[in-house]
Every structure is written in C-alpha cells, then in structure tokens.
Amino acid sequence: MSDCPQIRTAVCTALLVIGVVLSGKIAGETQNTPSPSATAMVRRCTNNLMRQLRSPIPIRFQERTDAPWGSEIRDVILTRTGRVDRLITIRDQPLTAAQDKKEIGRLNALLQKPGTHFAALPQDRELQRRLKLVAAIPMAFSFQKSVEDGSASQEFNFFPLQDFHPASQETRVYKGMRGVLQMDVRRAQLLRVDGEIFRNVPFGWGILGKLHKGGHFRIEQREVLPGNWQITEMDFDFTYTVFLFSETHYIRKITNTAYTSIDPDTRMETAIGLLLSQPEEPSVFSAGAR
Image 1 (cartoon, helix red, strand yellow):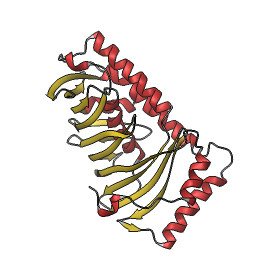
Image 2 (cartoon, one colour; image 1 turned 180 degrees about the horizontal axis):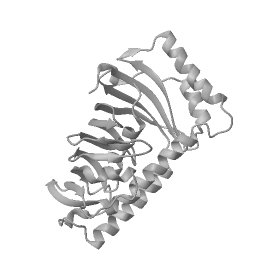
Image 3 (cartoon, helix red, strand yellow; image 1 turned 135 degrees about the vertical axis):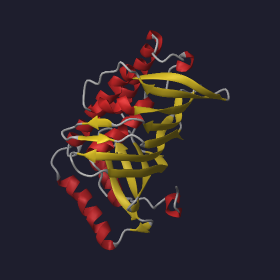
Image 4 (cartoon, one colour; image 1 turned 90 degrees about the horizontal axis):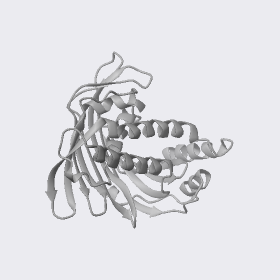
C-alpha cells in the first residue's frame, strides 16, 4: 500500500502549483508571459503559502484513500509540527483484532521515542522540499483567464513559461504541467483544479526516473471550518518509471471529511494519545464515498 516517495512529492507539487493563485487579482492577465505586476502578485501569494506551510492550522479529520488494491480510512490529526494518524478501516471493513493491535503498537512505539522530534526529521525534509517548490512558482508559470462563472467564480488556464529553467530536480516537473483552475475571487480561494502532465518529465531526488505524459489530476477545496480552507478531494492518475524498471501506474483518490477543530497548541504526543484513547468511528465514508 506504500507509494514511491518521489511520486508522492510530484503529486504534492500539483497542490503547490494551485495554492499560489488562491489570492491576487490575476484575472486581467491574458498574456502568455506574466506582467511585472502579475509576477509580484503571485510572489506575494507564494509568500503567504509558504507561511501557511510553516505554520499549519491544527485540525482533525478523516482521510479515505481509494486505490487499485482497495480502500482505507485513517483518523488524522495535524499539529503544528506534523501529522499523525490511525488506520480505522480497510476495504470498508473495521480492522481485525490483529490489525488494530498492530496500529496501537505503531503509535505506542512513536511515544517511546525520546524527545518531541520523533517525526520532525522526515517531515522537515518534506517541508523544505515543498518550500523550494513553492518559491519557484512565480518563475515557472503563467496564468490566463479562461471562463467567468458568475460574479464570484472564475477560471484560469495555467501553463509553464518557455523560458523557465528549473534550478533543482524537484522543480523540473513544472516543465510538463498545465491545466485549469477555478477560484472564488471574492474570498480569494481555490475551488477546483483540473490538470495534466502534457509532456514527459524527468525527476531526480536521489534516483533516476520520469513522469510520463498523459497523467491527470483533479483537486477540490472548500471551507471546512469558519475561516479554514482545506483540500477535500484529490484524484491522481500518473504513469512513471523509476530507474530502468517497468512503468508503474499510480492511481489514487483521496477524500477528506469530518473535520473538527483541536487545541492549536496540541503537541504530537498529545495527538497520539488522542488517537489511542479516542479513536473516531468511520464517517459517511463507510457508505463508500467516491
């Protein structure tokens, strides 16, 4: 059930591409190259997004993943220093006693690790990678108004600038991404994005491989709590090759729901304790939300 970490980063790239345009009035920019004002606006958006990445709003929710091997639901708690979760169903069935015991053992093992940074190192590396991806967005993409849907909702095409030269392995994926995003311009928030990998893109991150053209992704966002916008649906379909091995088809649909607020000062140890002592019952996902 585990995924290639390099592909997970490529998938998160799609999210970061879109997050940068959640604010700013870029509706007037219809040229294939952004004006200085549009670039400055996007740069302000990236700065805001980077602050959000560095200081996430603590929250609890349920995450359903649908993949070729089946489905699973996790009870997730996001703290300021990272995420912890507990598996609660597999293929729409409660865990067996053995599976639940394994989950409890995994969480207890985390609590036994010394200090408060047992999960910080890998999550910090991923954060630094995402920050690098965000910082490159103003230089990588142009945005063009597509469709205006009512007074609040507008659509924009986004596509890579021809003169963008990636400075890192991570940002190479930008050379092959394009799509359409819909945003609420009154509240300056993303509503939906449909995108594609329209050309083969090599990637690195310590190994050799490439994303193949023809991949698609869809992302939706909504206000899950007052003033708190979260990605609620992600649908990915990619084909990739790692080193000299055969092609792998990556298909995932991730749907989040049942959001609840938590104490903003919740520590990772406390979050693990909550998952151990107060496991959430599966939400409407158990009915097969798709």
